[in-house]
Length: 322
Image 1 (tube, one colour):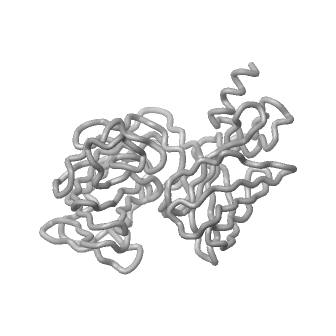
Image 2 (cartoon, rainbow, N blue to C red):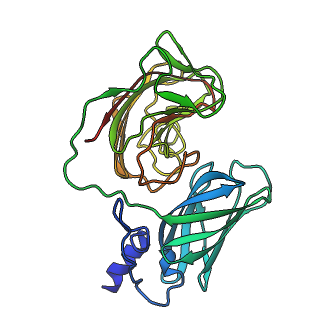
Image 3 (cartoon, helix red, strand yellow):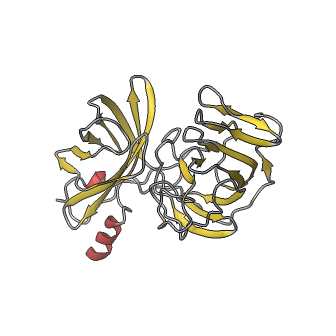
């Protein structure tokens, strides 16, 4: 029994993150009462208050061995970053992570307190700015039963931006039936929100460009001019950014129309890249950098990244689950 429970804790199944779609689970006793920070083990959806503006973040804490806490952290940008050790003492915890894409030359410092089934604290950035944050246990988004699919919906009408909104000053246009971002600028977000769905998109990018499609506005599937012979990575073509690596880079290259067929049910995702399955029914652990928010249990939009280079879409079809 001790070994079985230990294995469960190692996989992150214990603690406040282990609950159904809407209802938190009751606290679960750890394998040993003297394990430091046992209530911190699990996944947490975090919201950072950046001078009145909300920024989403995410944390997972696991037990390594019998007493060391380790984890993974996602900030408001970039990919998931490993946490080699989470320090915990009398309800307070802290850890450091190096900068990734951010400016500044010092480590991020995350400090917090565990308060029942929630956490809160501060984050000091690599530039030395300090913000408050709060966190709640992340839903496991478990689904039961057989999925029943509704009717396909065309999110792009081929004529204009009806049903979409830019996140800032808009550079998106529709030309000859193609939804186009001719240069880096704002992201584009669907007005409709969805729970579980099948999504078909057709896209084209020029050489060296970079974009992505965000599922529920929180999980980015990478669209990038990745070399076909590149070693597969979660941050390259068809990867779930920072989390899930495709089996291969099944890209057709720049200046060519390509397609993704993506099925998302709860946290489980399947990605078919240009007709070939490259990620098969794998779990997305949490939000990716650039997410709109960290409220993972809620429905969310489809959003296209427009701030990393030119990108075109000509087909955006979604089939929601009933």
